[in-house]
Length: 283
Ligand code: PMP
Image 1 (cartoon, rainbow, N blue to C red):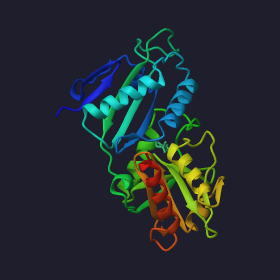
Image 2: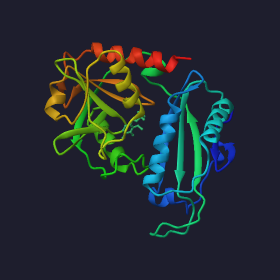
Image 3: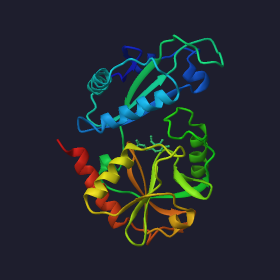
Image 4: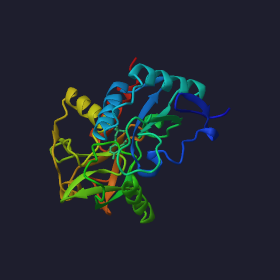
């Protein structure tokens, strides 16, 4: 069966899913995106993802994207149906649109809107946790990481550096404090079993999985702190893990070859995976 994607109002075979070379997403990364998990025929936290997408659009001043939330949902569900997937991820991207290369923001151009679905393989589909080794590196990204911008080169290079050095990912550090993973948020559990993650600011993306896990933790009497934490606090944590809509929850066994806790998958992360799986499986 052909993979089907969506480009500017049309469902097209993936091989024919094109945008123009004048598209400002292509020329300048003048675009934002969103990724949502579809789990056993349910779209997870759609409203939170769409609110974040609209916030990102507002922050980069794309003010004329006029597809309603209901229409976006209809397109997404249609894509999963046409691709015969009951679990996967949906990638949505909106660019400012096509216009001859111009450094000022053009007015009155139609935004480009594309959507495509992919299968996911993560703790959410396998329903088990597998831990990874990460390294730290300086956060080389811009200062608007709260915008879900498609300008991801710094993140791609940071992740590739980790892989080339034999790690799975990079945890980024700004001014001595951890920001986040290259494509995920980072949590630690300290020696008092407190769950800690950086508070929302312009140096991290406000992850929807992060937000959901914080709520689930609080509802289940896990002590939570949203605050900056240092590389030393990460080294001394009892548990550490990354979160995102597609990877789910990924425990970290070591950072720069320093073992986290006893190197085994911890109790809190195991409990949180169970709570999260219950949440996404809920009718
Ligand atoms: N931070 C960054 C930089 C990301 O790219 C992502 C994944 N989109 C996340 C955090 C996690 O966000 P979410 O839980 O909404 O997938």
